[in-house]
Length: 454
Image 1 (tube, rainbow, N blue to C red):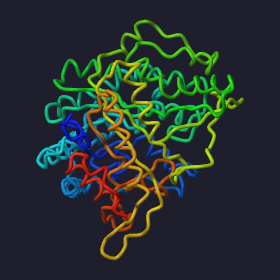
Image 2: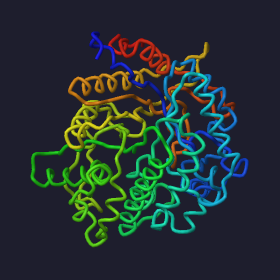
Image 3: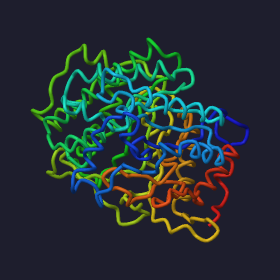
C-alpha cells in the first residue's frame, strides 16, 4: 500500500468493461455466424421494443475511435468479450480468419494506447449452430469451448495476458434455462443443472487448453449478490442459506473447491443429478484470478416460490437504480471478505460494477449530468478500498459499462454507460461520471474522497 491511505495499491488496474453482442453490431459481417442472441432478439416479444444487436453501438466499425475515447479517459485496461460465432461460424471446425483479425486489430490498438486487454471468451452469445446441437445441454460442448479458446490463445496470447473463460454462468443458466428471460429462452428445472455443469466442464477444459498453449493468466468471472434475511426467523435464515448457495457459491465452489454446495440438491430435488469424480477433476483447475461482478444485494424471505423457496424483498428506504436494484455498497465489502475467507484470498478483479440511471439528453456544450451514477461509483470504490484494508487481494476495477449499449432483453431502455451513445447518430459523449472516473484514475484513487462535483 502507498503511504497515502487514500491511494489504491501499486499496480491496481483501472478500466472499463463491455461485451461483444452488446456493443459490436454487424453480427453477421465478414463471414460470422448467427448466435443464440441474434435468434432470440429477432423472435417477436423477447426484447423490449423488439430491440436487437444488429447495430448496437456499431463498435465493429468504430473500434479505433472507441479506443481513442478510452485513451482520452485515461483507462489503463479494457475488458471485452469475443464473439464465438465470429471466430467459428459453425461453433467448431472452420476458422473465420476475418473474425480473428478483427480482435487482433483491436488488441494491437489497445496496446498501442497503453491499455491492457482483458479478454472474455464467453459473454452469453453461443453460436446458433451449437445450440442446434444441444448447446449447453450437450456434454460435447466442453471440447467445443476448448477448441474455440485454443484458436484465440494461439492468435493472441502474449498480446493478451489476462483471459477469462466464462462471464456470469449463473445468469446463463438462471435466465436462459430456468426462467426463459434470456437466450436461448428455455424454462426447465431439469435442464438447468445440466447446463450449469456443462458450463463448468467447458470452463475447466478451456483452462486446461490454456495451460498447454498460453503463458500468462486465466480466470473465471461470476456475479455475486449478498443475501440478507428479511427477519430473524429460522425460515428466513434457511432461505438465505439456499439463495446464497444457489447464486454465490454454486460456481465458485465447484471451480475452486471441487464440489457444489449441498443446498443445490434441496433446491432442485430430483432434477439435481450425481456427477462423476472425473467431471469434478476437470472443473477444478488452478486459476490465476477470479473476477467478481457486483451490482446490488438481496433481502430474502422464505416462500414457496420455485425453485428456491425464497423471494427477494424490496426495502422501503434507499436509492434504487432504473433496473430496480438497491444501491448497497456495504454488500460488496461483505462479499469480498466472504470470498477471501472461503477461497483463500485468490487475486480478484472487480470485473463489472455500475448502474443504470435516467440520463438526460446531451446538454448544450456536450454535457450529460449523471450525479447518481457518480455517487454510485464513488461509494463502491470506497467499499473496495475498505475491503483492501481488510486484507482482500483486489487487483483492479472495471466499471460497467464504457458505453450505453444493448441491455440484453431490456433492449436500449436502460443506460449503464459512463459514455452516452446517441443510437441514431452513434455520437459518443462522456458523461459527468466518465470525467469523475477519469480523475480517479489519474490520481490513482486519491480523488475518490473529494466532494462530488454536482
